[in-house]
Amino acid sequence: MQALALDMGGSHIGCGVVEGDRLLGSSSIDCRGALSLADMLPTIAHTLRTLQQSVGTSGHWAGMAIGFPGIVDARTGRILSALKKYEDALDIDLASWVRNEFDMELRVENDARMAVLGEYFAGAGKGIKNLVMMTLGTGIGTGVILNANLLRGVHAHAGCFGGHMAARFDGRPCHCGNIGCAEAEAGGWSMPLVLREWPGFPQSSLAEIASPGFRELFAHAELGDRVASQVWERCLHIWAATAVSLIHAYDPQVLLLGGGVMQNPYPVVSFVQDYVNQHTWSSWGKARVCAAALGNSAALLGAIPLLTEDMHAATV
Image 1 (cartoon, rainbow, N blue to C red):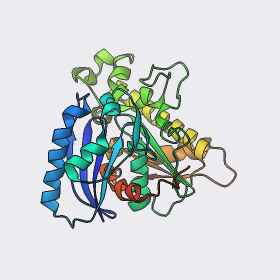
Image 2 (image 1 turned 90 degrees about the horizontal axis):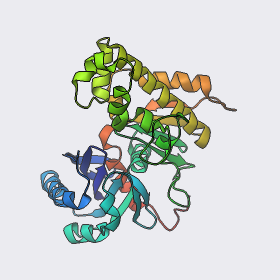
Image 3 (image 1 turned 120 degrees about the vertical axis):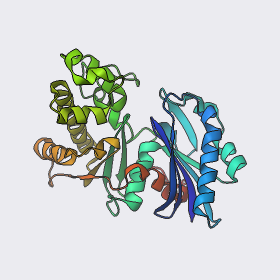
Image 4 (image 1 turned 90 degrees about the vertical axis):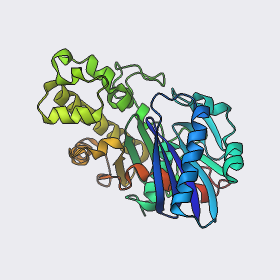
């Protein structure tokens, strides 16, 4: 069984053809600066067709699955809310677009939920019935597997708002309306803002970079830049504190860390594990912190389990 898959991240759209738990082919579309999904659809369609032709297909299609960076109810197939990215998606009939372009059925889900579904189905979460994943990238996305079911909640909010747990009650305003959210304090989109306000930033080597992100932050910290080192250390503590909050909220056996940040060689996992061991309250032991296994393919490999899920029974 094969499927087309889209992972609509903050800076890139991942496109893939999957077969079971294998990614047959993938490509990435740079979407930085793109606010309109309608403008991106022709490029997406062309990229997916090119992938289909390049990998060869069996013709046994489960459909297309889209991981979208917003509030999504997969049970009704509706994108309910977008936040500063593809806000026109609420007015686009994506199901009709998929039928017209590819003669397939569509399922759409929050992108971080699709990522944890992919890790549960084919990656580091395989066989783990109670699992939380935190994706560290442009934003901070979270997804939860609870008793072997993807957690969604009555309004489709449950499990995917971990990046909007408050890390500081007096912190930075977040796009979501909250103050001091984890991603407003230590997400990729907020890094240039955090750095510009940091004491001593004008003297930092990072000041010469137009929009410094995690890659530059880590590299300059390794070179001994004081501001880079301080902000990197702060990010680690915010991610670790958020991990503790997620463990207290959802009681997982394992917490996975994924996203672009995990491409850095710094031992993020061991830092978070040590923090979790020190700061979580538990009656049974400590949740294990692990690196996600699938990298940028996690959400794409969530396509088959999403497309084959019985939505009539999906009440969690």
